[in-house]
Length: 548
Image (cartoon, rainbow, N blue to C red):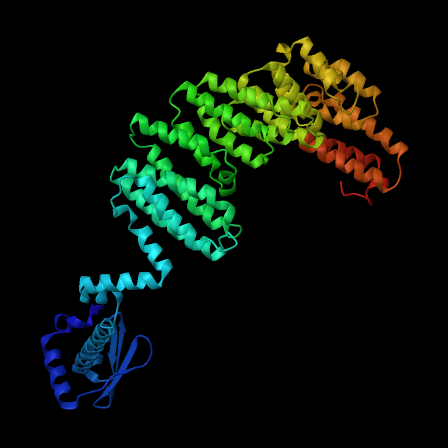
């Protein structure tokens, strides 16, 4: 049972409906809402319950014998009729209240009712009294005012705006910047409309003036500069949108020249639009000479004492345009070679690698090393260089970088990278690595070469003579793959020698550390065998100190 209360007649039989109407005329029952969904009534000393959900009858019951026999009765019908009337009356009352509230004074009603000449007179009078309103009116509707020269029109308009917002101290307050941002937003919308209507000259005149004047006015805005930066960024977005349209060659050159002349301004950096302007100019550089000019200008910016973040922003704009031109790549490589800031070069190397430019990434990385990159930053840069050298398929570079990483981590991943190229590595490169890279052990390179060239007997002999377990751990993975029994015995001998010469809790903790390294970088089976060896042969010395 579930039907709308408006459709009582369609869901109860005719006899029940007639009985219900008779009861309704005779007793005129009342209904009471007991909770959110339940209504109750009392007719002829019988209690009737009706459950309503969203004006739909979900269930009903009555205490009379007729309901017990047939599941419905005239009492139910009578109550449903009363409920329908009650709900209908409630809805009508709500409609009346809404209609009454809608008759309150509103701006739209006043505008519709006021004659145009009276409305104009009021606006004129109010604009005289409220200077800010008058300026907002001019800014909002400036596009519709015909002028022989649009640049002159917008310059005059902005003169009025700046004059009103500038204090006697020649500054614009935080509140003034908020007003200025609002005016900029209005002008951005007008530029948007002009672009949509293909009035490209008018749009460029507006955007040209607006960006130029904002770059000049920023020195007067010591407060709330972030809000102005957001508005100016939107203005640059409109210029970028315009630059992407089918412009005439002359207008493209105008926009290119404008963006090129502004991106390196100090105010452009302060407003955060330097990168946007450079990107616009790069996008319009359809001639080799224009691209070269821009890259030379970028190179000049890189020589100045600007922040690393600013230089990286410029580089991020330039990099996407480099793959299309070998000449541009050559110019940018020259910019990299001139840098001496290792942090900048390191970030450039990572950025270039992410942009699939491994050659330039390697150049920046090597330049970072020449600039004196601190040791604590080598690991991150070596990983970038390994990725670049793998993409360049350069065995010598793969060998050098993976060998360094293998020495630092002991990871078999880097050992395998070395192993994959060892037959193609030149003796000169090996000599270069030996002379230029300082490993923690003097003979790490010779041990690595024994392992990489699979001279296992020689490697086992040398490692057996050494008492350095850390070195043994580095070569445990390749050794255990080929000589598992000999490798295990070598570790056992080293562990025994160590335990015989060290006492107290320190040896136990050190052994636990070594076992974790073996398990992580070498082989779990080897680590398990060594744990069993230690439990069996040194139970009293170790069991209280460290859980093996």
